[in-house]
Length: 282
Length: 225
Image 1 (cartoon, rainbow over the protein chains, first blue to last red):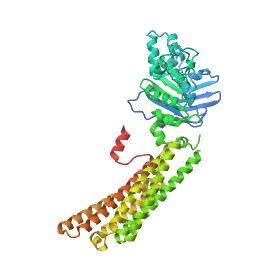
Image 2 (spheres, chains in turn red, yellow; image 1 turned 30 degrees about the vertical axis):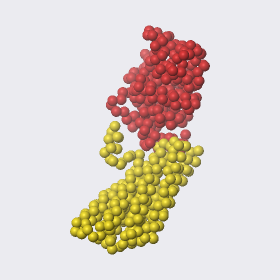
Image 3 (cartoon, helix red, strand yellow; image 1 turned 90 degrees about the vertical axis):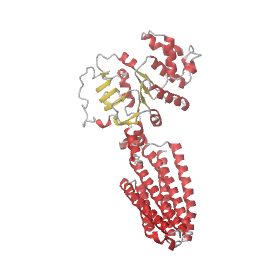
Image 4 (cartoon, helix red, strand yellow; image 1 turned 120 degrees about the vertical axis):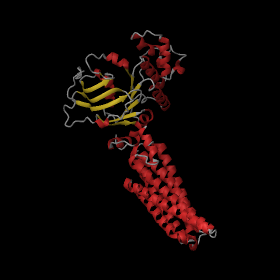
Protein backbone atom coordinates (compact mmCIF):
# COMPACT_ATOMS: atom_id res chain seq x y z
CA UNK A 1 0.00 0.00 0.00
CA UNK A 2 1.35 3.39 -0.93
CA UNK A 3 -0.35 6.00 1.19
CA UNK A 4 0.24 9.61 0.29
CA UNK A 5 -1.68 10.83 3.30
CA UNK A 6 0.59 9.76 6.08
CA UNK A 7 0.88 13.27 7.42
CA UNK A 8 -1.75 15.86 8.08
CA UNK A 9 -0.22 18.01 5.37
CA UNK A 10 -1.94 17.21 2.13
CA UNK A 11 -0.51 17.02 -1.32
CA UNK A 12 -2.28 18.85 -4.10
CA UNK A 13 -5.39 16.72 -4.66
CA UNK A 14 -5.85 17.83 -8.23
CA UNK A 15 -2.49 16.66 -9.45
CA UNK A 16 -2.85 15.00 -12.81
CA UNK A 17 -6.24 16.46 -13.63
CA UNK A 18 -6.90 19.16 -16.17
CA UNK A 19 -9.63 20.97 -14.33
CA UNK A 20 -10.39 21.40 -10.65
CA UNK A 21 -13.30 19.19 -9.71
CA UNK A 22 -14.00 20.45 -6.24
CA UNK A 23 -17.55 21.69 -6.35
CA UNK A 24 -19.02 23.04 -3.12
CA UNK A 25 -22.48 22.61 -4.61
CA UNK A 26 -22.27 18.85 -4.23
CA UNK A 27 -21.77 19.11 -0.49
CA UNK A 28 -24.99 17.95 1.14
CA UNK A 29 -27.40 20.62 2.26
CA UNK A 30 -27.05 19.75 5.91
CA UNK A 31 -28.74 21.96 8.42
CA UNK A 32 -26.43 23.31 11.12
CA UNK A 33 -28.08 20.87 13.54
CA UNK A 34 -26.65 17.88 11.67
CA UNK A 35 -23.18 16.95 12.80
CA UNK A 36 -20.75 15.65 10.21
CA UNK A 37 -19.14 12.31 11.05
CA UNK A 38 -17.15 11.70 7.88
CA UNK A 39 -15.91 14.56 5.75
CA UNK A 40 -14.18 14.00 2.44
CA UNK A 41 -12.52 16.85 0.62
CA UNK A 42 -11.17 16.31 -2.88
CA UNK A 43 -10.39 12.67 -2.15
CA UNK A 44 -8.70 10.84 -5.00
CA UNK A 45 -7.96 7.12 -4.76
CA UNK A 46 -5.71 5.43 -7.29
CA UNK A 47 -4.85 1.84 -8.03
CA UNK A 48 -1.49 2.37 -9.67
CA UNK A 49 -2.12 4.92 -12.41
CA UNK A 50 -5.85 4.36 -12.48
CA UNK A 51 -7.92 6.86 -10.48
CA UNK A 52 -10.91 4.87 -9.19
CA UNK A 53 -12.19 7.86 -7.17
CA UNK A 54 -11.55 11.43 -8.31
CA UNK A 55 -11.80 14.57 -6.21
CA UNK A 56 -14.78 13.43 -4.18
CA UNK A 57 -16.01 15.92 -1.58
CA UNK A 58 -18.95 15.18 0.68
CA UNK A 59 -20.10 15.29 4.28
CA UNK A 60 -21.77 12.29 5.88
CA UNK A 61 -24.13 13.32 8.67
CA UNK A 62 -24.38 11.72 12.09
CA UNK A 63 -27.20 9.26 12.87
CA UNK A 64 -28.53 9.16 9.34
CA UNK A 65 -28.32 6.65 6.54
CA UNK A 66 -26.30 7.80 3.56
CA UNK A 67 -26.51 5.69 0.41
CA UNK A 68 -23.90 5.69 -2.33
CA UNK A 69 -25.24 4.63 -5.71
CA UNK A 70 -23.80 4.38 -9.18
CA UNK A 71 -23.05 1.89 -11.93
CA UNK A 72 -20.44 -0.85 -11.53
CA UNK A 73 -16.92 0.52 -11.48
CA UNK A 74 -17.97 4.03 -10.46
CA UNK A 75 -15.78 3.91 -7.35
CA UNK A 76 -18.49 3.70 -4.71
CA UNK A 77 -17.10 0.61 -2.96
CA UNK A 78 -13.55 1.97 -3.22
CA UNK A 79 -14.68 5.16 -1.51
CA UNK A 80 -16.61 3.24 1.15
CA UNK A 81 -13.67 0.98 1.92
CA UNK A 82 -11.37 4.00 2.20
CA UNK A 83 -13.43 5.23 5.15
CA UNK A 84 -12.14 2.47 7.41
CA UNK A 85 -8.93 1.88 5.49
CA UNK A 86 -9.91 -1.47 4.06
CA UNK A 87 -8.14 -0.48 0.86
CA UNK A 88 -4.83 -0.47 2.74
CA UNK A 89 -4.52 -4.13 1.86
CA UNK A 90 -4.58 -3.45 -1.87
CA UNK A 91 -1.11 -3.13 -3.45
CA UNK A 92 -0.44 0.10 -5.36
CA UNK A 93 -3.36 1.87 -3.74
CA UNK A 94 -2.74 5.54 -3.08
CA UNK A 95 -5.01 8.20 -1.72
CA UNK A 96 -4.86 11.98 -1.69
CA UNK A 97 -7.12 14.70 -0.43
CA UNK A 98 -8.60 14.87 3.02
CA UNK A 99 -10.72 12.16 4.63
CA UNK A 100 -11.74 13.07 8.15
CA UNK A 101 -13.55 11.07 10.83
CA UNK A 102 -14.94 13.46 13.43
CA UNK A 103 -12.33 15.99 12.42
CA UNK A 104 -9.39 13.58 12.57
CA UNK A 105 -7.51 12.65 9.41
CA UNK A 106 -8.14 8.94 8.88
CA UNK A 107 -4.86 8.56 7.00
CA UNK A 108 -2.59 10.40 9.42
CA UNK A 109 0.45 8.50 10.65
CA UNK A 110 -0.80 8.26 14.22
CA UNK A 111 -4.12 6.71 13.23
CA UNK A 112 -4.29 3.05 14.22
CA UNK A 113 -6.29 1.26 11.49
CA UNK A 114 -7.38 -1.45 13.90
CA UNK A 115 -8.78 1.12 16.31
CA UNK A 116 -10.35 2.97 13.38
CA UNK A 117 -12.13 -0.22 12.25
CA UNK A 118 -13.50 -0.68 15.76
CA UNK A 119 -15.12 2.74 15.46
CA UNK A 120 -16.09 2.32 11.84
CA UNK A 121 -17.38 -1.22 11.37
CA UNK A 122 -18.13 -2.92 8.12
CA UNK A 123 -20.70 -5.37 6.77
CA UNK A 124 -19.85 -7.04 3.49
CA UNK A 125 -21.77 -8.15 0.43
CA UNK A 126 -21.79 -11.83 1.31
CA UNK A 127 -22.44 -12.90 4.89
CA UNK A 128 -19.12 -14.05 6.31
CA UNK A 129 -19.67 -15.52 9.79
CA UNK A 130 -16.73 -17.10 11.56
CA UNK A 131 -16.74 -20.92 11.65
CA UNK A 132 -17.81 -20.75 15.28
CA UNK A 133 -20.98 -20.70 17.31
CA UNK A 134 -23.50 -17.88 17.03
CA UNK A 135 -22.49 -16.70 20.50
CA UNK A 136 -18.77 -16.66 19.73
CA UNK A 137 -19.33 -14.86 16.45
CA UNK A 138 -20.73 -11.92 18.39
CA UNK A 139 -18.55 -12.17 21.49
CA UNK A 140 -15.21 -12.75 19.74
CA UNK A 141 -14.37 -9.21 18.68
CA UNK A 142 -15.30 -7.72 22.02
CA UNK A 143 -13.40 -10.42 23.94
CA UNK A 144 -10.13 -9.96 22.07
CA UNK A 145 -10.49 -6.21 22.45
CA UNK A 146 -10.54 -6.57 26.22
CA UNK A 147 -14.24 -5.98 26.84
CA UNK A 148 -14.74 -5.87 30.60
CA UNK A 149 -18.51 -5.83 30.86
CA UNK A 150 -20.91 -8.76 30.98
CA UNK A 151 -20.29 -10.57 27.71
CA UNK A 152 -23.65 -12.39 27.84
CA UNK A 153 -25.47 -9.07 28.06
CA UNK A 154 -23.39 -7.65 25.21
CA UNK A 155 -24.20 -10.64 22.97
CA UNK A 156 -27.91 -10.40 23.75
CA UNK A 157 -28.00 -6.63 23.23
CA UNK A 158 -26.13 -6.89 19.93
CA UNK A 159 -28.34 -9.69 18.65
CA UNK A 160 -31.42 -7.73 19.69
CA UNK A 161 -30.17 -4.60 17.91
CA UNK A 162 -29.57 -6.71 14.83
CA UNK A 163 -33.18 -7.97 15.05
CA UNK A 164 -32.17 -11.63 15.22
CA UNK A 165 -32.30 -12.39 18.95
CA UNK A 166 -35.72 -14.04 18.87
CA UNK A 167 -34.59 -16.36 16.09
CA UNK A 168 -31.34 -17.53 17.70
CA UNK A 169 -31.78 -17.16 21.48
CA UNK A 170 -32.37 -20.90 21.90
CA UNK A 171 -29.44 -21.99 19.75
CA UNK A 172 -26.66 -19.60 20.67
CA UNK A 173 -24.14 -22.42 20.85
CA UNK A 174 -24.92 -23.90 17.47
CA UNK A 175 -22.76 -23.19 14.45
CA UNK A 176 -23.40 -19.90 12.70
CA UNK A 177 -23.31 -21.82 9.43
CA UNK A 178 -26.63 -23.45 10.38
CA UNK A 179 -28.37 -20.11 9.87
CA UNK A 180 -29.98 -18.98 6.63
CA UNK A 181 -28.24 -16.38 4.46
CA UNK A 182 -30.40 -13.55 5.77
CA UNK A 183 -29.84 -14.65 9.37
CA UNK A 184 -26.10 -14.92 8.77
CA UNK A 185 -26.05 -11.35 7.45
CA UNK A 186 -27.91 -10.07 10.52
CA UNK A 187 -25.48 -12.05 12.67
CA UNK A 188 -22.62 -10.26 10.91
CA UNK A 189 -24.33 -6.96 11.67
CA UNK A 190 -24.65 -8.05 15.32
CA UNK A 191 -20.96 -8.91 15.28
CA UNK A 192 -20.14 -5.44 13.99
CA UNK A 193 -22.45 -3.79 16.51
CA UNK A 194 -20.91 -5.72 19.43
CA UNK A 195 -17.78 -3.60 19.07
CA UNK A 196 -20.00 -0.58 19.67
CA UNK A 197 -18.86 1.30 16.60
CA UNK A 198 -19.82 4.84 15.74
CA UNK A 199 -20.28 4.23 12.02
CA UNK A 200 -21.42 1.15 10.11
CA UNK A 201 -20.30 0.78 6.51
CA UNK A 202 -22.43 -1.60 4.47
CA UNK A 203 -21.23 -2.78 1.08
CA UNK A 204 -24.19 -4.24 -0.83
CA UNK A 205 -25.47 -5.96 2.33
CA UNK A 206 -28.55 -7.43 0.64
CA UNK A 207 -27.23 -8.42 -2.76
CA UNK A 208 -26.96 -12.09 -1.79
CA UNK A 209 -30.33 -12.21 -0.01
CA UNK A 210 -33.88 -13.06 -1.04
CA UNK A 211 -36.61 -10.37 -0.90
CA UNK A 212 -37.85 -11.33 2.57
CA UNK A 213 -34.36 -11.33 4.09
CA UNK A 214 -33.70 -8.05 2.25
CA UNK A 215 -36.80 -6.49 3.78
CA UNK A 216 -35.64 -7.54 7.25
CA UNK A 217 -32.21 -5.97 6.71
CA UNK A 218 -33.82 -2.79 5.38
CA UNK A 219 -36.03 -2.56 8.48
CA UNK A 220 -32.93 -3.14 10.55
CA UNK A 221 -31.00 -0.34 8.82
CA UNK A 222 -33.83 2.00 9.68
CA UNK A 223 -33.51 0.99 13.34
CA UNK A 224 -29.72 1.15 13.34
CA UNK A 225 -29.57 4.82 12.48
CA UNK A 226 -30.91 5.64 15.96
CA UNK A 227 -27.61 4.44 17.41
CA UNK A 228 -25.19 4.51 14.50
CA UNK A 229 -24.31 6.43 11.38
CA UNK A 230 -24.84 4.13 8.40
CA UNK A 231 -23.16 4.43 5.02
CA UNK A 232 -24.61 2.04 2.49
CA UNK A 233 -23.35 1.12 -0.96
CA UNK A 234 -26.05 -0.44 -3.07
CA UNK A 235 -26.83 -1.27 -6.67
CA UNK A 236 -30.48 -1.38 -5.78
CA UNK A 237 -31.77 2.13 -6.30
CA UNK A 238 -35.15 1.32 -4.82
CA UNK A 239 -33.35 0.19 -1.69
CA UNK A 240 -31.39 3.43 -1.53
CA UNK A 241 -34.66 5.33 -1.96
CA UNK A 242 -36.37 3.31 0.77
CA UNK A 243 -33.76 3.27 3.51
CA UNK A 244 -31.50 6.30 3.16
CA UNK A 245 -31.82 9.91 4.20
CA UNK A 246 -29.08 11.16 1.88
CA UNK A 247 -27.88 9.76 -1.42
CA UNK A 248 -24.62 10.27 -3.27
CA UNK A 249 -24.52 9.41 -6.95
CA UNK A 250 -21.08 8.52 -8.33
CA UNK A 251 -20.14 8.01 -11.94
CA UNK A 252 -16.73 7.11 -13.34
CA UNK A 253 -15.03 7.90 -10.06
CA UNK A 254 -16.62 11.31 -9.61
CA UNK A 255 -19.34 12.42 -7.25
CA UNK A 256 -22.01 13.76 -9.54
CA UNK A 257 -24.64 14.74 -7.01
CA UNK A 258 -25.20 14.49 -3.26
CA UNK A 259 -28.48 15.54 -1.75
CA UNK A 260 -31.43 14.44 0.32
CA UNK A 261 -32.69 11.10 -0.96
CA UNK A 262 -36.13 12.57 -1.68
CA UNK A 263 -34.54 15.15 -3.93
CA UNK A 264 -32.31 12.67 -5.75
CA UNK A 265 -35.23 10.38 -6.57
CA UNK A 266 -37.86 12.97 -7.41
CA UNK A 267 -36.08 16.02 -8.79
CA UNK A 268 -32.32 15.51 -9.14
CA UNK A 269 -30.39 18.60 -10.13
CA UNK A 270 -27.96 16.95 -12.53
CA UNK A 271 -28.96 15.41 -15.84
CA UNK A 272 -26.59 12.44 -15.36
CA UNK A 273 -28.29 11.61 -12.06
CA UNK A 274 -31.67 11.86 -13.77
CA UNK A 275 -30.49 9.59 -16.59
CA UNK A 276 -29.05 7.02 -14.19
CA UNK A 277 -31.96 6.76 -11.76
CA UNK A 278 -34.46 6.50 -14.61
CA UNK A 279 -32.40 3.75 -16.22
CA UNK A 280 -31.46 5.76 -19.31
CA UNK A 281 -27.88 4.59 -18.83
CA UNK A 282 -25.82 2.48 -16.44
CA UNK B 1 -36.73 -3.24 -20.63
CA UNK B 2 -35.89 0.43 -20.20
CA UNK B 3 -36.68 1.21 -23.83
CA UNK B 4 -39.90 -0.72 -23.41
CA UNK B 5 -40.81 1.37 -20.36
CA UNK B 6 -39.97 4.63 -22.11
CA UNK B 7 -42.20 3.59 -25.03
CA UNK B 8 -45.04 2.70 -22.67
CA UNK B 9 -44.63 6.05 -20.93
CA UNK B 10 -44.79 7.89 -24.26
CA UNK B 11 -47.90 5.94 -25.27
CA UNK B 12 -49.54 6.93 -22.00
CA UNK B 13 -48.54 10.56 -22.39
CA UNK B 14 -50.09 10.60 -25.88
CA UNK B 15 -53.24 8.90 -24.62
CA UNK B 16 -53.60 11.47 -21.85
CA UNK B 17 -53.05 14.29 -24.36
CA UNK B 18 -55.78 12.83 -26.60
CA UNK B 19 -58.13 12.72 -23.62
CA UNK B 20 -57.30 16.36 -22.91
CA UNK B 21 -58.23 17.30 -26.49
CA UNK B 22 -61.49 15.40 -26.16
CA UNK B 23 -62.32 17.28 -22.95
CA UNK B 24 -61.42 20.61 -24.57
CA UNK B 25 -63.88 19.81 -27.39
CA UNK B 26 -66.59 18.88 -24.93
CA UNK B 27 -66.19 22.14 -23.01
CA UNK B 28 -66.46 24.12 -26.23
CA UNK B 29 -69.63 22.26 -27.19
CA UNK B 30 -71.06 22.74 -23.71
CA UNK B 31 -70.50 26.50 -23.94
CA UNK B 32 -72.11 26.61 -27.38
CA UNK B 33 -75.05 24.50 -26.24
CA UNK B 34 -75.70 26.97 -23.41
CA UNK B 35 -75.29 30.16 -25.44
CA UNK B 36 -77.34 28.84 -28.38
CA UNK B 37 -79.77 26.84 -26.20
CA UNK B 38 -78.90 23.97 -28.51
CA UNK B 39 -80.49 20.83 -27.10
CA UNK B 40 -78.98 18.38 -29.57
CA UNK B 41 -75.49 19.72 -28.90
CA UNK B 42 -76.19 19.38 -25.19
CA UNK B 43 -77.16 15.73 -25.74
CA UNK B 44 -73.91 15.17 -27.62
CA UNK B 45 -71.91 16.60 -24.71
CA UNK B 46 -73.64 14.22 -22.31
CA UNK B 47 -72.95 11.25 -24.58
CA UNK B 48 -69.29 12.13 -25.08
CA UNK B 49 -68.77 12.24 -21.35
CA UNK B 50 -68.98 8.44 -21.40
CA UNK B 51 -65.87 8.38 -23.60
CA UNK B 52 -64.07 10.57 -21.08
CA UNK B 53 -65.11 8.29 -18.20
CA UNK B 54 -63.78 5.26 -20.06
CA UNK B 55 -60.50 7.01 -20.88
CA UNK B 56 -60.10 8.09 -17.28
CA UNK B 57 -60.25 4.49 -16.09
CA UNK B 58 -57.91 3.26 -18.84
CA UNK B 59 -55.30 5.96 -18.12
CA UNK B 60 -55.52 5.50 -14.35
CA UNK B 61 -55.15 1.72 -14.68
CA UNK B 62 -52.10 2.14 -16.89
CA UNK B 63 -50.47 4.60 -14.46
CA UNK B 64 -50.97 2.14 -11.60
CA UNK B 65 -49.66 -0.73 -13.71
CA UNK B 66 -46.51 1.14 -14.72
CA UNK B 67 -45.88 2.27 -11.15
CA UNK B 68 -46.24 -1.27 -9.84
CA UNK B 69 -44.14 -2.92 -12.53
CA UNK B 70 -41.37 -0.35 -13.03
CA UNK B 71 -41.21 1.65 -9.78
CA UNK B 72 -40.26 4.82 -11.65
CA UNK B 73 -38.25 7.64 -10.10
CA UNK B 74 -37.22 11.16 -11.07
CA UNK B 75 -38.86 12.66 -14.15
CA UNK B 76 -40.64 9.38 -14.96
CA UNK B 77 -42.26 9.37 -11.52
CA UNK B 78 -43.24 13.02 -11.88
CA UNK B 79 -44.77 12.35 -15.29
CA UNK B 80 -46.87 9.46 -13.99
CA UNK B 81 -47.99 11.47 -10.95
CA UNK B 82 -48.88 14.42 -13.18
CA UNK B 83 -50.81 12.22 -15.62
CA UNK B 84 -52.74 10.64 -12.76
CA UNK B 85 -53.72 14.00 -11.28
CA UNK B 86 -54.44 15.67 -14.61
CA UNK B 87 -56.52 12.65 -15.57
CA UNK B 88 -58.72 13.28 -12.56
CA UNK B 89 -59.05 16.99 -13.34
CA UNK B 90 -59.96 16.26 -16.97
CA UNK B 91 -62.70 13.91 -15.90
CA UNK B 92 -64.07 16.51 -13.49
CA UNK B 93 -63.96 19.17 -16.21
CA UNK B 94 -66.03 16.89 -18.44
CA UNK B 95 -68.50 16.49 -15.56
CA UNK B 96 -68.79 20.27 -15.29
CA UNK B 97 -69.43 20.42 -19.04
CA UNK B 98 -72.20 17.83 -18.60
CA UNK B 99 -73.73 19.93 -15.82
CA UNK B 100 -73.74 22.91 -18.17
CA UNK B 101 -75.26 20.81 -20.97
CA UNK B 102 -78.01 19.58 -18.66
CA UNK B 103 -78.93 23.21 -17.96
CA UNK B 104 -78.77 24.00 -21.68
CA UNK B 105 -81.39 21.33 -22.43
CA UNK B 106 -84.13 23.41 -20.85
CA UNK B 107 -82.72 26.92 -21.14
CA UNK B 108 -83.88 29.39 -23.75
CA UNK B 109 -81.86 32.17 -25.28
CA UNK B 110 -84.05 34.89 -23.80
CA UNK B 111 -83.60 33.67 -20.24
CA UNK B 112 -79.88 34.06 -20.70
CA UNK B 113 -80.00 37.57 -22.15
CA UNK B 114 -79.14 39.75 -19.13
CA UNK B 115 -75.96 37.76 -18.40
CA UNK B 116 -75.22 36.58 -21.91
CA UNK B 117 -72.23 38.86 -22.46
CA UNK B 118 -70.58 37.91 -19.18
CA UNK B 119 -71.22 34.18 -19.71
CA UNK B 120 -69.77 34.48 -23.22
CA UNK B 121 -66.69 36.19 -21.86
CA UNK B 122 -66.38 33.59 -19.09
CA UNK B 123 -66.67 30.77 -21.61
CA UNK B 124 -63.95 32.28 -23.81
CA UNK B 125 -61.63 32.87 -20.86
CA UNK B 126 -62.18 29.39 -19.45
CA UNK B 127 -61.57 27.71 -22.81
CA UNK B 128 -58.47 29.82 -23.24
CA UNK B 129 -57.22 28.75 -19.81
CA UNK B 130 -57.92 25.11 -20.55
CA UNK B 131 -56.19 25.28 -23.92
CA UNK B 132 -53.19 26.92 -22.24
CA UNK B 133 -53.01 24.30 -19.50
CA UNK B 134 -53.24 21.46 -22.02
CA UNK B 135 -50.59 23.04 -24.23
CA UNK B 136 -48.35 23.48 -21.19
CA UNK B 137 -48.84 19.79 -20.37
CA UNK B 138 -47.97 18.72 -23.92
CA UNK B 139 -44.83 20.84 -24.01
CA UNK B 140 -43.94 20.83 -20.27
CA UNK B 141 -43.72 24.62 -20.58
CA UNK B 142 -43.65 26.33 -17.18
CA UNK B 143 -44.22 29.83 -18.58
CA UNK B 144 -47.40 28.83 -20.37
CA UNK B 145 -48.55 27.02 -17.23
CA UNK B 146 -47.93 30.11 -15.10
CA UNK B 147 -49.87 32.32 -17.48
CA UNK B 148 -52.96 30.28 -16.61
CA UNK B 149 -53.04 31.50 -13.01
CA UNK B 150 -53.70 35.19 -13.79
CA UNK B 151 -56.62 34.26 -16.05
CA UNK B 152 -58.22 32.32 -13.22
CA UNK B 153 -58.54 35.55 -11.25
CA UNK B 154 -60.30 37.15 -14.21
CA UNK B 155 -62.76 34.24 -14.37
CA UNK B 156 -63.39 34.53 -10.63
CA UNK B 157 -64.12 38.25 -11.08
CA UNK B 158 -66.62 37.50 -13.85
CA UNK B 159 -68.31 34.91 -11.66
CA UNK B 160 -68.64 37.46 -8.86
CA UNK B 161 -70.14 39.89 -11.35
CA UNK B 162 -72.81 37.39 -12.37
CA UNK B 163 -73.70 36.64 -8.77
CA UNK B 164 -74.13 40.35 -8.06
CA UNK B 165 -76.29 40.82 -11.15
CA UNK B 166 -78.51 37.90 -10.20
CA UNK B 167 -78.86 39.11 -6.61
CA UNK B 168 -79.87 42.58 -7.82
CA UNK B 169 -82.36 41.13 -10.32
CA UNK B 170 -83.75 38.72 -7.75
CA UNK B 171 -84.31 41.56 -5.29
CA UNK B 172 -86.16 43.53 -7.94
CA UNK B 173 -88.41 40.71 -9.12
CA UNK B 174 -89.01 37.10 -8.23
CA UNK B 175 -90.06 36.30 -11.79
CA UNK B 176 -87.63 34.16 -13.79
CA UNK B 177 -85.90 32.79 -10.68
CA UNK B 178 -85.53 29.29 -12.21
CA UNK B 179 -83.82 30.78 -15.28
CA UNK B 180 -81.49 32.79 -13.07
CA UNK B 181 -80.53 29.65 -11.16
CA UNK B 182 -79.71 27.96 -14.48
CA UNK B 183 -77.44 30.85 -15.42
CA UNK B 184 -75.84 30.77 -11.97
CA UNK B 185 -75.22 27.03 -12.33
CA UNK B 186 -73.58 27.54 -15.73
CA UNK B 187 -71.37 30.27 -14.30
CA UNK B 188 -70.47 28.10 -11.32
CA UNK B 189 -69.46 25.21 -13.59
CA UNK B 190 -67.35 27.51 -15.75
CA UNK B 191 -65.65 28.78 -12.64
CA UNK B 192 -64.98 25.17 -11.55
CA UNK B 193 -63.51 24.34 -14.97
CA UNK B 194 -61.15 27.29 -14.55
CA UNK B 195 -60.10 25.91 -11.17
CA UNK B 196 -59.40 22.48 -12.70
CA UNK B 197 -57.40 24.13 -15.51
CA UNK B 198 -55.39 25.90 -12.80
CA UNK B 199 -54.78 22.53 -11.11
CA UNK B 200 -53.51 21.12 -14.41
CA UNK B 201 -51.14 24.07 -14.79
CA UNK B 202 -49.86 23.48 -11.25
CA UNK B 203 -49.28 19.82 -12.07
CA UNK B 204 -47.35 20.82 -15.18
CA UNK B 205 -45.05 22.95 -13.02
CA UNK B 206 -44.51 19.96 -10.74
CA UNK B 207 -43.86 17.80 -13.78
CA UNK B 208 -41.27 20.20 -15.16
CA UNK B 209 -39.57 21.35 -11.97
CA UNK B 210 -40.53 19.01 -9.13
CA UNK B 211 -41.90 22.00 -7.20
CA UNK B 212 -45.35 21.81 -5.66
CA UNK B 213 -46.74 25.31 -6.16
CA UNK B 214 -50.27 24.58 -4.95
CA UNK B 215 -51.18 26.23 -1.63
CA UNK B 216 -47.98 28.32 -1.79
CA UNK B 217 -47.56 28.79 1.95
CA UNK B 218 -47.81 25.07 2.73
CA UNK B 219 -45.27 24.12 0.05
CA UNK B 220 -42.88 26.84 1.21
CA UNK B 221 -43.15 25.70 4.82
CA UNK B 222 -42.51 22.06 3.84
CA UNK B 223 -39.44 23.17 1.92
CA UNK B 224 -38.13 24.99 5.00
CA UNK B 225 -38.66 21.89 7.17
